[in-house]
Structure formats: structure tokens, C-alpha cells
Image (cartoon, rainbow, N blue to C red; front, side):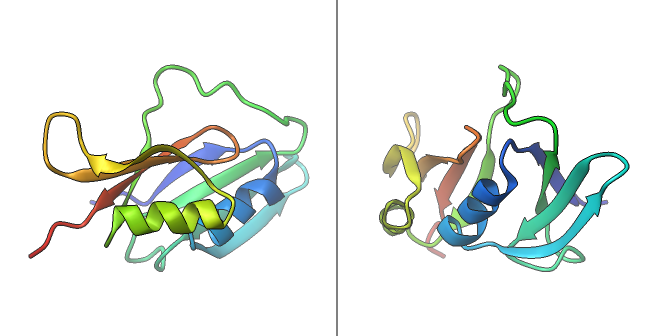
Length: 129
């Protein structure tokens, strides 16, 4: 078994795609419109779906905002250098919610960014081998 994807509902598909592709550097893997259901699914990620977990962005045509709720945590992305990643994300127009630095009760370097719909994405700095 493996994790295939995580689905996020987005209020503005173009805005969400801009964030995940231009700010975070993912690529669109596939897209499908469902006119009878009035929604669009777009899968984005860093690698092919057959080998890596990806994110499914679901855009319901008649809904422009969602309440994230208190149960959602975050998506985590491993990066080589969290400090550099935060700077690059800011330069691309992304919002850094927690600057890179050691986690509160440990030594792992982390940061948090927020997508246009308010979903949190944790950046975890890869540990040296």
C-alpha cells in the first residue's frame, strides 16, 4: 500500500494552480473537468503519480471559499534548505507564516507557508547524511 494523493478543495483554481506551480514549483500532472458534476480536478506534484504522492486540487464551480475547520493540519514537503526555500517562496509572492528555524522541542529545521486558500504547508529541511 502507499499514499496516492491528498485532496484539497480550492475556491479559485487559477490562483491555487499559480501557487502550487509557480511558488512551490510543482507541475500539473493531469486535469479533468466534470461538467455534469460542475467541478474540476487537477493533480499537481513533483514526480509522477505512479511513484509519488501528489495533491488533488478540487474546484467546485459554484463554491468560491471553504472553511478549513479545526481538524486539518498541514502537508509536509522536504527541502534541502528551509531558509533558502522561504526566501524563494517570498520572492515568488508566497506567504511565509513561520520563518525557517529549529522546531520548538527539537532540532529539525522547519518553516510554514500558507496557500491562497489558507492551507498550511510545512517545509522540513532534509537532515545531512
